[in-house]
Length: 342
Ligand code: UDP
Ligand code: MG
Image (cartoon, rainbow, N blue to C red; front, side, top):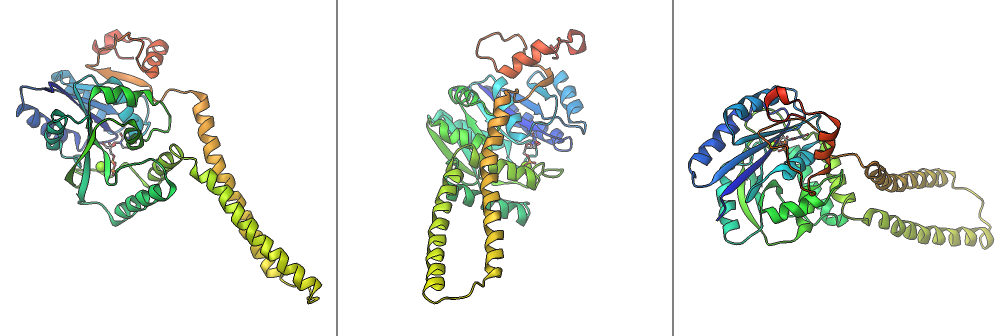
């Protein structure tokens, strides 16, 4: 039986949704008092009052735990921070904007009690999303399929439940280019999918503008496959074949038909085409090299500016590197809230 359930909630400027989110999860928890509930909010560098709201709630409700990241590190890293710190029999990652109905957690619990280790929530319908968002999402899955990137389940976001063994596995995949859907797909274990209708955002605007989506798509592709680099050699082979045919044709025209040298236009066109192609290939290689550069720096994924209701005394060797770094570089301000703010 699952006793402790921890909801991991990344939030970035969600002050309009948080009160309603908190109300909904409290109602959910009241319906199941035999289980112990924790709500681990990861404040991903919000600047709109979310931090103050979370601190106020945490002061009154011990179930509310808060990690304040010192700056915005992005949705995936915020989730990773939550995964690092959560301690429960079942962990559930869920968005703060109420697009993922918290009540679905009960279905997830049922699946885990049936023996599954990971339960993904798959979107059957997505209300309130723009055509652009739906279109780019479709394109994203199509690209994943074509490029052979991460083997992800279509229409599943990051609303999922999993057991501590999976948490340990996912935590061990440290990369600054986190793409959790790919990591979970890679992790194995017994996984299942349940469907749900995705609600519109409760308030505010999406925090995933086009550029962030492109970055996520790149992380999903480049982090899981070297196919684009291999494709460069394929493309160059094809072009080499075409140019060989063209060379033979030119030689025949010159020596057999004594044709005059013309074709300035085609030369220029080809020049543009091949220069563009070479630059594109360099960009692909550059994208991989850039990732090596970022990873080589070995910076922490995130660093904390404060915590609420999260014990800071863990000394096991398995603790996340960021946690040690935050503690060793910033002295604890014991007077500020008695919670060991780092
Ligand atoms: N989020 C975050 N950091 C970011 C962007 C988003 O923690 O840099 C959170 C956001 O507050 C929300 C969740 O991640 O709880 C999903 O973001 P959003 O709803 O904007 O994405 P969408 O549902 O539009 O894909
Ligand atoms: Mg959303």
